[in-house]
Length: 328
Image (cartoon, rainbow, N blue to C red; front, side, top):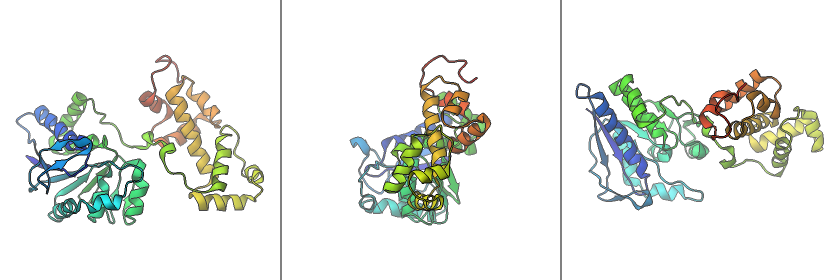
């Protein structure tokens, strides 16, 4: 039996507390009595824990486990992360102790911030929700944060993306402990996607903080308003009465990227919207966002989203039009 403990703490997401144990329970039934199963417990250094939404959790004292899972918590704009984490000193100590004992430690979503506070992410690759990856990188500069990944494991420490990625982690655990056939069947029974490899297709750049000040904002707005036009750095610089070199320097200083890099990401964002909400052909969308060669467009789109346009449409189409004939 693989012993798995889920660390409950005040304000943690209850879905993560129950989600991993539920999927492991399903896997145990699917595997049958001839394969080793999972012994799952919800543990805490506290006697009483109230999760997000006011859900009271029944918890057991901390105990020896093979895998310790740390759920995420509600991280909203304006939340004082320092204050939140300072109130979880008991949990931070428990996380550090389990890691020191050689146990595998896993975070779900922004539970990565607790691992960072415990010192577990220093000089390790890690991930978290794409929405908060920059905050994690700022808070833990010695970590190599990979915001495009769903699950990252580095030297006994696993971090995952937003809370549904707990299922991606659980399926990996089932695959390693019970076999690929059990993991595959568990995914089918639970209607969980076992083929995801990246959180890039889910990123909504509109929700991310936009770097820069008035100059870069004006340049971005100009590019956004002319997505289909041929990119001409000299003409763009003339629009803002600066040299090409000055435009590149100021834009990079304010945003950390070039205008062309921003234009590519903006075109891909527009293409994603058209693929999701219209029945326009991929070739038509390619032209509409400023590309002449469908192959170049498809490769660039895959680089940004992890999926080629047709695959992206199949996964994220919002149910309009007719199911066939839209990708000619």
